[in-house]
Image (cartoon, rainbow, N blue to C red; front, top):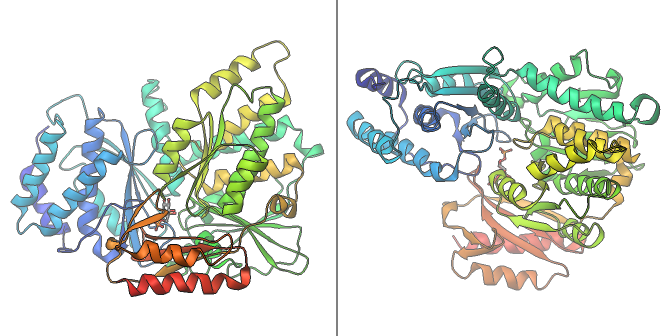
Length: 557
Ligand code: G16
């Protein structure tokens, strides 16, 4: 293949209108005001094609989303052929290519950077039997169709890529479909190649039904009534498709969707959704709870996060966040391992970030006796730790982003145990079904929600019992707007600041004044802000504690 130089130049001139702004490929790709993203979309499309060429033409995913951010923002991230986040060593390329286009005074400068990258990665554009394959998806934002055109403009016309456009999907659907399409290609089933949204629904509904059949759901299991706030994002329409499936077994009056106006752009994530509920620790707009037996949950704008909550008999709000979800799964799966006599053969562990409530970490270690690891914020860090350290690696950020990774050894062990005479124990079958029910590529609000429903039903736990397993330390998360967040540099999995020099010792002196106090400060990778987290024993002192830290942060810039 030869790059059509003239065509590339023409598209570059037409598309790359935004110049001289600096972006970085942050926690979840590029993310900023949608109006400034044309150039970055253009270069990210090219990078995805190069990534696919580097990987012998496998499907590479690209998702246009700004997830929990406000409606004016948008963003883009690249997904590896196995559904994981872009290889870390390619993130700098994403930035180099974007910056080349943003700061080039003429096309040739950008082109020279592109050629440099192609040579550096030894990408053989001439390999005639390799065509790049790209899967693209977008959330419900108004700006997405235009940005999709910027993203894909060069793919077919310059690089002869085959583009599978999924239209509006959730981020986890894009991850799942990218992975499945590649698995099918590898298995050589050309009739089935290129997975679809329908495959996603069939797979997860199938896993849910299998688990429920194992327990003879109708007679022995019941799920609490569930209200789902879909943040007026893409989760609403996609969830409705799942619930409308003829194979879906939970009675329709058991589940009610609220905040499902994905066609009204300004409502996206506005006073609703997982980020709002978690950060403000209150009910989303549009929900007036009537029964303390019901369970509620909120997705974020692209449905890759979920947090649960309920109200007690005095209608007081209780949050069941990512920490509560991971502890619920850790309790449930540890028990299943024990019942299957596999607790010594398979290692279960939980991965958290600095945002995890101190009580959750203590509960996992001291009550569940499970190992806990801490990583930096960002799914890619947690995912890696879960996949490499454990056979059942449960990872959740406190904000509700997470999943469970089951190792190859786990699958082999379960299969071999199931094949033994009398091997079909309930615990083994439960473990086997659960490993399917949880999206293996990335945190997925829909799949996590199904897994929580199933777990509560099997454990016969009401929302309140789930909550009672441990009591959160009072905690607060504050966004601090500063002139330049990049000066806030951290170490020790983001728990300590290295820069601005001297700020950490001031923070430490504040922490020392509050019993069970813990606090840290880090720059967000998705918003133009610095985040301040604080927790301590005494609720009445929390605001004062947090304000003192914020005061030092503001004084340092
Ligand atoms: C993204 C990342 C998450 C991260 C969140 C906030 O979530 O995927 O891992 O926790 O941003 O990150 P930060 O504190 O750096 O802004 P989402 O749901 O917005 O894609």
